[in-house]
Length: 252
Image (cartoon, rainbow, N blue to C red; front, side, top):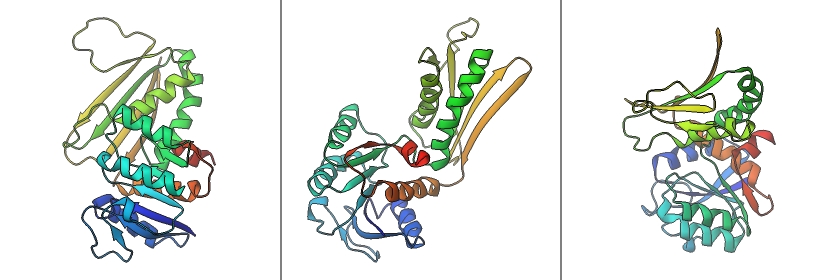
């Protein structure tokens, strides 16, 4: 049984994680952390991490970058594994997360979906075959009209996966409107679409002579990220100190 502390338990994703864990006989939420305080949860909720006195194997965080300092101090001092699912961290905060990995097991991924992380691995094999054969690579990502950043972190992770497989010789192009020239063969085009309530759609296109191969992932609800976080908690519990990501879960 993996015992979980859920940070951000009163938010939307916190409620989704709670429902998933409730239906999973191998996991249990033993405490929550949320500035909103105790609601109708069946587990105790603390407004500050430092006040939590419940024993656990792993902490899942779906709260805010503002909570990072307190969560890191809590997890490192208690040697509790930590999974950070929140977005919007600064470079300094990411450095803090990596530094904490010297003291306990820490996981941070651009996307917690199992499907996306499997796709990251599949793309490496595809790129090694198709790029040398002259295929161009384009990525199109689609999200809801409230998303403020573009391109998405997941789109960049997909591009990085392709680029890593090709010795990082490719450059990323986000806008072709200002330059009139032919596409460079060492270029990955990344386009962003914003509209409606699209949860998340990512398409990687390998376009060659007379044939096109497409890899596509569609998230129909945010529950895919919660499911991935719970799977990650099972994997990370009991692991030695170090920095992990969802690829470790997929390849386990």
